[in-house]
Image (tube, rainbow, N blue to C red):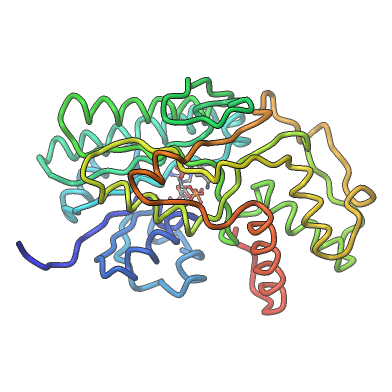
Length: 331
Ligand code: NDP
């Protein structure tokens, strides 16, 4: 037995989860490597915001290019790989279905093949998503719930989930998928509805906008706090056996409640400040999504500490602090 520090390779280290995971792993003494499609062009704004730039070793790697994937994995020979890269916006996936499917499905397959090809004992985490389930209905979805994705993004995530399970069963790889429900933080870019709401409510409160325009408000989601969710990813790879886990709070809340809480923060009545815009509706959407994180609690000892009202408050606190400091928004 050696006491050498473990090495992790995080595909998509510049994203929201990548940056939080890098912090989590560095805090635990890991040597952290991370990828971006173009290391030179990426600003790694999230790593900079967390004060981590320079602490992780950064590489360029394009997931759809097997040579590029095998090269970085062969160079780093990590103990753990976390695949957090790929087109991650459900809305954008309707406009870029092929790019979304390729980056998620082929990207995951390339990592699995590279681990197998190189004969490594690397443990692999696949970032799966509640979008695989589609509508869960009122009963929280556990790991046995049927997949019925409602977007090209969800279709890609479902395929990557099954590729991961198939490589685990066929080649005995330590490969698992975390089926994560929505998780937020101030590192999310403006494209996501939660950030639109937070920034929109702040703009209205500061007199920079009259109203906030949003799409479908009747959808319900299970929202948690991203820094807690990367802990669950790490627990999965440090569990005795490779298994898939649902990671969620177990509570669902209407988007309208999220909006109300955001405007309440400023003492404003959301009903006079929000307009719905048909142009922002998706071709198909999930009406209600809620997860059952019971298995993660039993086997990993993981449980969400921050519930949806706490998520809204933390996002607004961070947004107002960012404005006070005059820092730019995450792009
Ligand atoms: P982000 O979008 O913040 O990060 C994903 C990273 O992937 C980006 O930083 C980017 O890195 C890279 N990327 C973006 N587009 C592409 C593309 N077309 N092809 C290849 N790479 C691309 O996502 P999150 O950190 O929020 O999420 C991490 C993972 O977890 C993603 O796979 C996401 O789908 C999944 N997930 C997230 C949930 C959430 O609520 N946040 C819920 C469930 C699953 P660069 O530009 O540097 O190459």
